[in-house]
Length: 258
Length: 237
Ligand SMILES: Nc1ncnc2c1ncn2[C@@H]1O[C@H](COP(=O)(O)OP(=O)(O)OP(=O)(O)O)[C@@H](O)[C@H]1O
Ligand SMILES: [Mg+2]
Image (cartoon, rainbow over all chains, first blue to last red; front, side):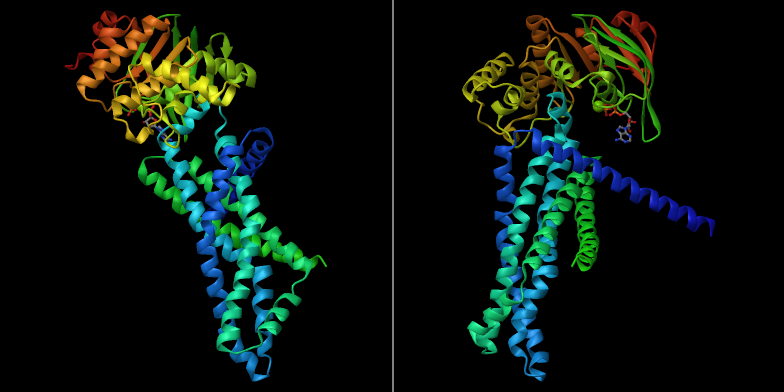
């Protein structure tokens, strides 16, 4: 019994310590956004995080939309409501699935590559070299990635929502033979301004969490190549966890805000 | 020039450096000799302020490294150079950007002017025509030279070398060492070299300190240090 309590105590301590360190890194890198000239790095990062994630995000979104229509049409047809298939796609995508799916994809792609890149800079002393040359590693490496992610994630997310509706459209119109005009109408009619706001807020927050969690693991990598591998795994796992957890919290908050 | 008093460092609750006292004079070549794992890298990184000391005091060029403000730190970074054990070139930047990095970040000089300065610095370490190469295309010895060129760009007063010959074949080691000696003469630098290589201590040092398990065992000229009979100096070269 005592063991369990000390174990839990240790676990709580670890979680709090992690949260504290992540928060410090976040504040530090936000400072960097306002103080450092990050222009040339920024465009590169925007391309890497946004543009290069686009193909995978589009493909997965289109397929998700298609699958959702296929699965729901059967049930809806039992009470003649096939036409609402579009609503189901758009409403579930905009507030929940869109932001989460995009975030998970980006966490897998970018989280892994950022932690590997920064982690290998750490173990080859490049981070130390930055400091010796009087450059703050957090402002130099984390801030541009953070800003790029803050800008690109909401875009990717809205594109994902739109493409999933279009994926559903393909199935609805060419396989189920619904009216294209009515499908589009239903899909878009049920999206409110608040939904769009929720969607953008979520993807914005997820974008921050992915970058901070991944950079944190990279900056704290130790040992050799093996250490970088571990950092990469931890970056992806903790990003996934933070995305799911913060989604729960954000959904709860928006549930209570009318 | 460098004054270290009662320096103690813990890493993950393990004592890595234990009550180190060293005074390094202007213009001297000070070699710190120790086996792998003795704490040499940690020592250098603490002295230049990359690792926080848990106790003790480090004064470099009149500044206390643990209490220094940002402007003074920039000034100190300009007066000191560091050559890393693993060279630590930025692998996403070209050679000239690596060498001119400090100037790119902290001055308003044009790219052309910085290239020119980088080229000069590269010439003085014996490298030509590699301005636009990427670090991955260079050999270990060339990377070391580029690392030295980067440290030289501001004409520093002190250069710290972490294992300048580690991982190099004997011929390349020899050429890097004569480069270090040449720079010492030309730029009149104070050199702090940590190494496990007896040859460096024997040929280049004004004074030698032996570091063993985080403690300074002895300090003196090479002849004095040899007389102590510490295992590291009594082994065959
Ligand atoms: N991040 C770390 N976590 C735990 N222990 C560490 C860490 N870094 C270094 N150490 C320990 O500190 C001691 C000194 O390490 P240091 O890198 O200074 O050795 P060194 O003298 O430079 O050796 P080498 O010649 O192999 O470079 C070693 O025993 C090492 O295991
Ligand atoms: Mg070392």
